View 1 (cartoon, rainbow, N blue to C red):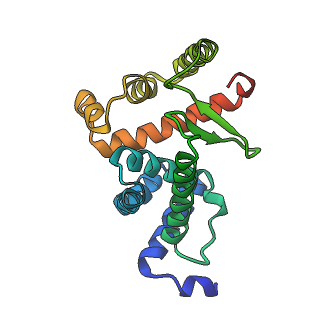
View 2 (view 1 turned 90 degrees about the vertical axis):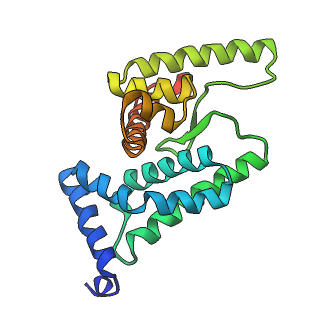
Length: 202
């Protein structure tokens, strides 16, 4: 295992957490990985986008993508290097879409075939037909959210329908911001799985 010899002690600890997460589905291992790198990923993304809410959302997306692809990680290099690459690439895509005016409040989610599905919540300057389509999408989104467990449903409704900040959600639910973000990440994963099974509707 020559590649392991090149890893730092911190990277080796990360590797143990990755193995625990994969083999046992250890939620504490996922939480530990997120806790070790959440702040550094967030501040890197904040420098890139210059907006705290965008950086918050992109941080959660980065961990979501990393955890979803965890089986693809190999110890040829540190987990942190791999994670930062995922976060950076995701952020570059976000910036590119924003510059091309194709970005909206709708956050695109990549499906297994590489296509995109959207959580359409709001949009400005719509014509009557688009307004009707938007209302239908919002209604469908509410239907999807209703399928979540109560605690996840509440988080999604507060974040995306009521448009509350992470701090406001934490205060209302009396939860640490880190817990709010971690549970919202899980809620997004569950939503994505539901949407994949209803792909023709979104």
